[in-house]
Amino acid sequence: MTEISFTSKIKPVPLKQFWDTAARIGDKNAVDFPWTVDQSVKASKAYTTNICDCTVCGITDGQNVLMLHLTPDNSSNHNFYFVKQFIAQNIKLGNPDLQGILIGSKLTKKSQDIYNKFSEFLKEMYIPYSELKIGKDRIHAAYSSLMDTWLVSSLKIDNLLKKGKTSIEALNETFQKTIISNADEIE
Image 1: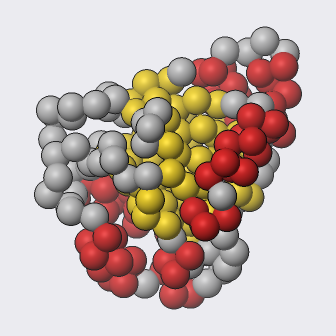
Image 2: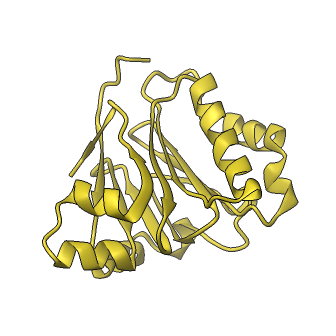
């Protein structure tokens, strides 16, 4: 899976820009509470908000994104056989253009369980992915296939950008672990 034909961008943005983008995307493509697979969205653009101890997994082929936002507080989200079946029904897993991102989680057993299961799944499927793990505040994320860009925002990111921090500095200071896949770039 090293022959990715496109490169997704990850761009930390101020809150105002995120909320403007979310408004343009619309509620129809929002992955919202109660944060189970039933609220997942497959579309050319999608967004989700308030990522704390939850894990967001986004998988894109450059045309569409499948965005899942799973809370560790719902026991059905820990049944990963069901989660994997849901993903397999919504995207072509053999597509060599697939790329992923994992955002969120906290250092609790229940939260790490979901994050680690997503990570193992992406590795099993040879889907390259970036990680923005354990944010220091509530994280918001959006994806647009038109720009092939992940927008990531939070109050901390907003403040860091206002202080003149670079995108990578904002990500590194907001997340405990920031790993950018070779298939992605920071904007």
